[in-house]
Amino acid sequence: MLTYTPAAKTIALALCAAGPAFAEPIGMLSRPYNSADQSKVQAFGGALPLPQPIDGGGGGGGGYDPRVNPTRGVNPFDRVTMSLLMYDIDLNFVPVNAGGEVSTLRGNAFTDGGANRNGTGRVRFQWDEVVISSTRTVIRAFISSTNNQPLVPASAVVPRAGGGTSPALYWTWHFGSIDPVNYMSNITRVTLRRASMSQSTDGGINYFTTTTTTSNIATANDWRPGVDNGSFMNTVGDGTNFVLLQYEVEYIPNAGTIALLGGGLASLTSRRRRR
Image (cartoon, rainbow, N blue to C red):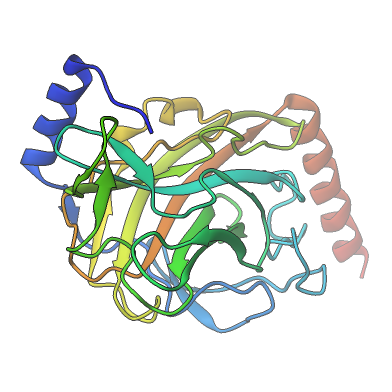
């Protein structure tokens, strides 16, 4: 357990007092993403069909189809550390998941993050990258409780350095804070167009609010490596048991990759004309 400096405390409390920046939902899923699921889901900007996976729906696939987005983006079998944290008024904090920062393999399987300090279930994590179109790719991450108990209920308390506990007032998340998102070697720039956090009280079936968090990620202009240290939320006790994080990114491959893609498209066009 750590304690922030007085200066950091002042800044964080000011942010929390202002409350989260609520916005219209910009990317909802009807349920947790599964790369083998071909139903329509809500993506950034509207409902679009998921691309056909080429890996049989196994771990690290992300529904990649080279005909849709040849540049891909995230390394196929990348790992990212994830955690959920809660804070008291003095910014003492402790992970909600007993496992702390948990290494999570990208794919459609959840990773156990340890016992929920605030309930009887466990906290689990999942993340993957979903190709939406030739220019839009969304990295999606999920945090949930295994038994639909709230992640940070009103009764949650934070241990204090000198002993005892105090009520939890804020919570946040870490995505890639220790082991970040790593990209394919041909990617020379990653622009984070939009980031959001959505909350659900029914296990991810419906989301009752979405908060835009792009401005809290200082490296959005070139999101390499991909790190999100979270945003302070003052909504403890609202019943949230499922959190959806979304990062809409745009990739810029190196010149050699662009030339190869151009040559491939030209070859495909030529073959079609000969038919």
